[in-house]
Image (cartoon, rainbow, N blue to C red; front, top):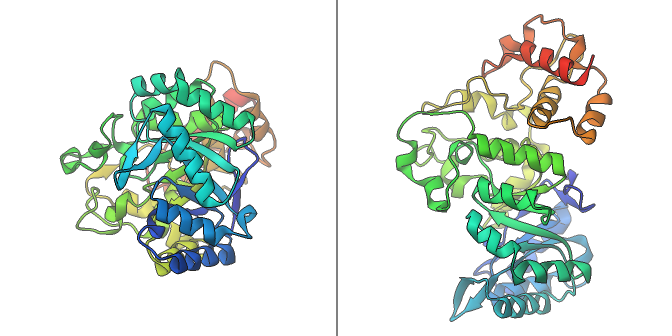
Length: 382
């Protein structure tokens, strides 16, 4: 298992994590089997959006004696009321629900305290200026949560949140179909079939801006909905008109800027094992570029997807990394020092580009790579 730094939190998470879908409606013994497999395979990040008390208690029992081996992403503002899930901003309900969560999990701290499901700018402003954020800050100061997170499906709301300086971790929905959708306060628009009826071209700018802004600011991203609820794995259901395999979906998400872990929604041990197999999969099994380039209803022409098909460069330049650093820098008034440092330690830089065109012939997305290398050399210096 490969582990990644979760932004600037100093927390290391496994590339493959798990959402709590797989634990819901499972017996305590079945939940323990999940946790046993995770420990065995090195999967350490668990998202806990569900407030189901039986699930929380079963997971707490399964974690007993090995709590420190896992990173818990626990949600504020999600409670169990009248036998069902409820999202709340009522601070007394938030406090009661979070205290119940810690008790049932058998822990006095969690690594990530995730402010749950904020999909509008106005709602974020109310949260940021209200008692929920005050409570989250207090929990962090007391060490009850190690970092403050936000879960969202709307890049505009997420951008406002991270620019406010309150958020350490972002949980966001990332896959190659949702990344084409414009910002919306209605999460159902992401999978509305009508939005995919006409050809879609290139990544929605606010989403690219969000990922790059997170990278610049050291905000770690944990990914939800990498498979689009399973639709992307089914040719009949895929909004793109063609299926991807699970490894391609995982690879796509893990190559976006700032992404640290993808949370599998596995509902069985076999599904979890299949996702974990990504770590030992062959490059051709992970390679999403040919599939994306062949989608009948979607095009990323001219947009670098960081897929690596441009390699190897005759001059040894890591073209995908140079392009990623260029994209991270161009929106800034000045080059952030961290980006300049990353560029400076590259073995070969853009100024060495001979404009031979070999990389452009390999690129599935017709990116003007030589021009990007020229821009990077001018920006960073040869």
